Image 1 (tube, rainbow, N blue to C red):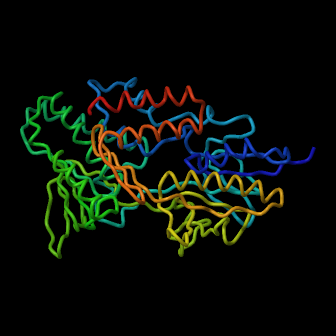
Image 2: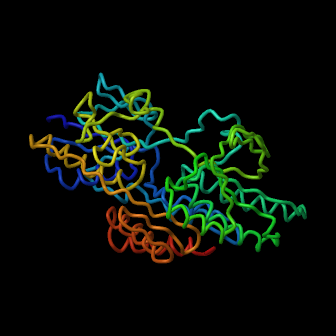
Image 3: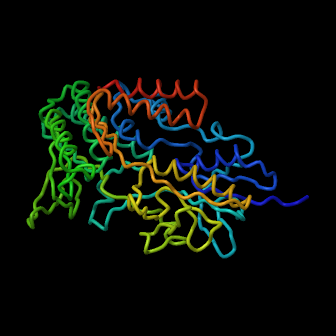
Amino acid sequence: MVKKRNIVVLGAGFAGLRTAQDLSRKLKDPAFEIILVDKSDVHLFPADFYEVATAFHRKITEECLLELKKTVAIPIETLINKKINFIHDFVVDIDTNSKLIKLKKNEDLHYDYLVVALGSEVNYFGIDGLKEHSFTLKTLKDALKINCHLDQHFQKLWREDKDQQVYINVGGGGATGVELAAELVGYVNCLCEKYKYQRHKVKVQIIEGSDKLVGMEGKGKAIILERFKELGVKVYFNTFITKVSEDKLFVKADGEERELDMNLLIWTGGVQVSKLVKKSIGSNEGRGAVLVNPYLQSNIDHNIFAAGDNAYFIDPVRGHLPMMAEPAYVEGALIAKNIINQIKGKPLLMLKAPPTRFLVPLGGKYALFVGEKFMFKGFFAWFLKRLIYFRYTFSIMSFVKALKKTFHSTRIFVVND
């Protein structure tokens, strides 16, 4: 029996899952086995983690948390066919010399083609006390932890009959920070009603190191600030966090240092390429990511491909591709095509970067869409985001399942709108 050649895909995020699914549908050569490896047994939709972190419930129960998980998590086994061998395990090392993937629990994997799509990690930038005294919003566990902590915090104030200012700070005014801060307002409103707490005592504020929001200036930034004014969210621009203690936030602005009160800090201000990728296959030139050519092949080994946060490629028109879901999804599809073309000896396809656009939820049924030529705001932008969620789920599962998934998540998320 002839031993099969392995196409190993590391990571079942937007890029990795798309690559594996497309390969399983389009690669007809029985000489190849498709192997998908991920540390989690579920495929996640991180774009809605902020919703999980702020979803209101009258009583926290195991059943309630399970329902919350279902809004953004889909078992990987339900998304793949028999052509894909899924391995639920941690990747420990990538040995490009021996073409081996070292796993934590399973035997080493040999690869003939390798796709690296392991995502990114939180970057604390060496800020003193930040890791120890802040929450992050990078994983589903993070989102659930924030949700439960806020409920427990207000419950504690209620039990102790305390009447004090509560400061909820969000570090970073990028997309995650902005959408989280806006949605926190609705959650806080519900918690204050639940625990009979004075709403005006609770402050939600963003600490941003630049003068932009979601990387935008001009009209886009003005719309966000207008919405924040309605919601009561305060923004500190050009302000850098220098140190964090248990109840204090030390910041620097205009050359002066000051302290801000803090009951909760959620850090959304930076990500970095997976440490595993950095040490094994990444490049300092690419900020730890894999340097790739326009076909998304590694510059060093053309049998290795990288996508999403793990690929460093500068598009001649759009520059460095942003660490966002849409580019990762497009890259995953291209990698599948190029692996098949390479196997068949056909010309490879160059990456056509998708247009840069933002769809930023701003609390309740309100969002801002910013395209290359136009922007709009309000309910329709929010509705568009739910349509995009449905469109994505429909691309990885059946129409009926995608529709049920969309209705389920929307029903839970709109409770505090």
